[in-house]
Length: 287
Ligand code: SAM
Image (cartoon, rainbow, N blue to C red):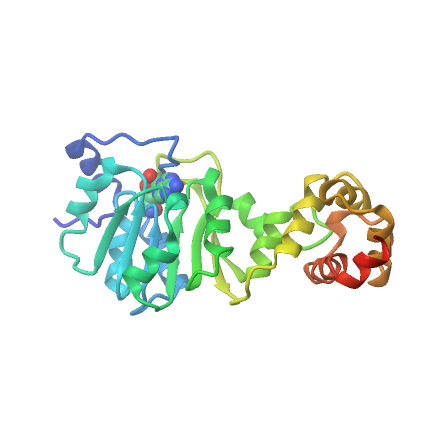
């Protein structure tokens, strides 16, 4: 009988035949549930599109992605997975694998070489400890990316979607919401993974807005949340080496109190504030 790739028995068989052991350090929790795989495929909207999958693991999700998409590029850090991926994807002719840490890849060059100038849709079931650096790597560099569908720790999904004045709100919320329009597709219990992680997960779909990087906005938000407990005036004065009077003046120009804290400002207010803080005319008044 032909078992599906994601069945625990198939995974167990691959583990034994290839003598593979899961690496905790690389966040290797592999999907063993067909429904979740189909949820990710449905959310990612990749019919006949170019796909970049980060961290294919045993290639269970990759196999379905290659059936639906046009061309699939896989980036996997663990070289030990090469024989497994070759076996699992042997019947697919639209797949290429690069063995590398995605954070060390020049994605501009790689995507240009593999997909010409065409847009790419990213799909990833990410190791939890590298979610933020990988998202920043994908978002901050004006890459030709159309969407990112990603499985993350449930708590991280909450931080990505959080609004001002909530405990989950922070620089990750602003990074994700500045660059993308996000939707939490579903939460995912730990039972759909082998081995089971300790935490629950969530699938998030991010549609890129196509905005370019705004250095001042990120300088300001990083400084604001680095010193969360201080007032915004104190946090920015210390973090950005600016005069407190100037910061208070800019806050007042957008009708905000100088006692306000970083977590109380919305993304739009941060955009306005960072523009004012770095405006030539205002800077000159305090020289
Ligand atoms: N996609 C598979 C699945 O859903 O069953 C595996 C997901 S597992 C949570 C994460 C995968 O990412 C592992 O295969 C791991 O080796 C790989 N990985 C970890 N860090 C990476 C990095 N920096 N660059 C590329 N791949 C990485």
